[in-house]
Structures are given as structure tokens and as C-alpha cells.
Image: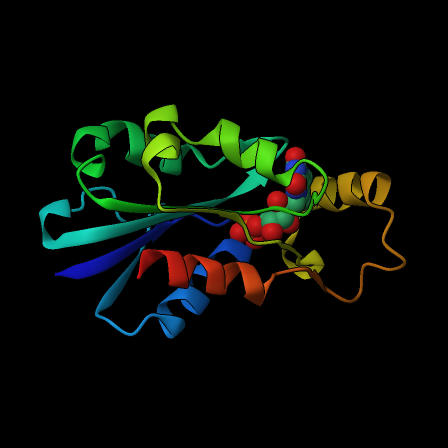
Length: 159
Ligand SMILES: Cc1cc2nc3c(=O)[nH]c(=O)nc-3n(C[C@H](O)[C@H](O)[C@H](O)COP(=O)(O)O)c2cc1C
């Protein structure tokens, strides 16, 4: 049986986390981008890792839809949940609000893996918001807080 990593990303950080997970997992792992692939046959997988990134406290709609639509079959699998976000103080709180309670209760792994500000990929409004909220010293260089330790924790917990 295989492991599925189903993720959504706006600027690539959650995708980077998903690819890091795949790279570290020894067994057969498939990646799907939930913004591109809508119908997945979950019967092929015994473990499913679901991830997305946080914008104004919410996760991508494609992630929520995937969880809601497949909730019954997902509850029968070994589940890992992750978010990519930049807040450290309330990262766990964000994680615990964006996924359905039923999955949070049964998940083997739940991690906020850090995030990235990919300024070159952001639109004007996004850059403006980040300049006001996070006050980066400049917007020429990307900022990354993706934690390899958190990625390893998921890999370990998923077995
Ligand atoms: C407009 C905007 C709003 C954001 N809102 C939040 C937020 O509410 N909480 C948070 O922790 N991070 C927030 N972030 C940071 C993103 O979650 C972070 O950059 C993440 O790594 C992006 O992942 P992605 O590249 O996969 O989309 C925000 C970023 C932008 C650009």
C-alpha cells in the first residue's frame, strides 16, 4: 500500500514541505496538488498526509473540500496533517482550526512546519500586507522558516 501526500500551495512553501516529506519517506509515496487534481481514488493508499498554507487564518478551499468530501474514507486511514504558515505564536491554534475535528482527533501527526515569504511570487496587495504586518528588512530576498525538524516529526509519526 502507498502513502498519499495531498497538498495545496499559493506560492510554493507547502509544496516544498510536501516534497521534503516525500524525499524522507522510504516507502512508495505519491504527491498530488489539490488545486490541480480534484478526484483521487483513496482506496489505493493506507496513509494520507494532507497539507496547505494559511492566509488570514484560513487554509486553501481545495484542502477543506478534499477533507469534507472524503471524510468517511479518510477516517479509516493513518492520517498526517500539516500547515505552512509564518506565525509561530499561534501556529498550533491555526492548525487546530483549519482541519475537521474528526481528522484532528484521529491524526497520527499534526505539525505547523513553518513557511516562506516568496516576495517575487506575491502580488502587490500581498506584498503590501506583509510589509505592514511582518515588517521585513527588505522584500528582495525570500524568507524561510520551514523546519526540517517538524518534517522529520511527521515522517517518524507516520512510520
Ligand atoms: C496575504 C498573506 C496572508 C497571510 N496570513 C497568514 C496568517 O494568517 N497566519 C500565518 O501564520 N501566516 C500567514 N501568512 C504566511 C503564509 O502562511 C506563508 O507565507 C506560507 O508559507 C505560504 O505558503 P504557500 O507558499 O504554500 O502558499 C500570510 C501570507 C500572506 C502573503
